[in-house]
Image (cartoon, rainbow, N blue to C red):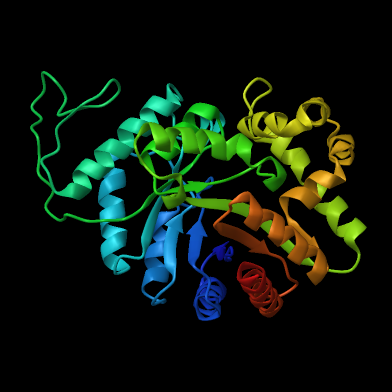
Length: 346
């Protein structure tokens, strides 16, 4: 296994702490640095900045939201970032959800699996340097009965890996069929087959090797002796995941946890949250969920959980490392890397 991490947040106008974190993460041997998109921050711009301040660490979008940009724009951005970073860029994609895509971007959240397939195919076509013509069910390039024409990229060809954040069965199979890596979420290593069996099926159907796909699992990392307090605090955070990260009828994270045995608990947390009782919702989250999805506690406890992730087949841990200061976070990141290296060598 190897360790990846997310870029830490920065105050407006002060990106130096984030730069320091990126540079020190690179020095510690972190494999890759990932950025997210929210309601105001994009995933690409910070990576362009970090590309100029780092030398070897890979730089990934975790995630660029499908539907927020045209496929050609995604390809243009990826080609540019790959060039700026001397080939260190990883294009991480995900559909996000209807609340964000329709509410923030004003784009219909329709046929997400088909839209994802077509975007990846178009991005790869542009990156190949070939003239852009494409006949899909959603995208037709150039537009029929228009003044458009097939255009050849002005740069390229370019190569960069494509990762997909996927949770549902069909999107997981698409990951195995088309992608170089998987960006996981709502992942419990004891039930990894819920995800990996579908990815493997997609890979085999496409004549690809499942072993060639990077399987990235997210973990929060917090060292400490008061395991009960740490676990309860992390468990309470899942109330937002079940209650706010989706609608009552369509919550991808809740659905993924339901397939792993937490259907009743997750739906009860969601019900309490949506009824306005957020404290009760947070109290209702099983503490074992925090312990199974994160690396919490003493060195020996975390070492044992690392073995579970390793044996499940996870190849990259995307670690969100806690600490009271930047220095403490970096110390804990180094501490985690030492543990991962020891477990991987066993």
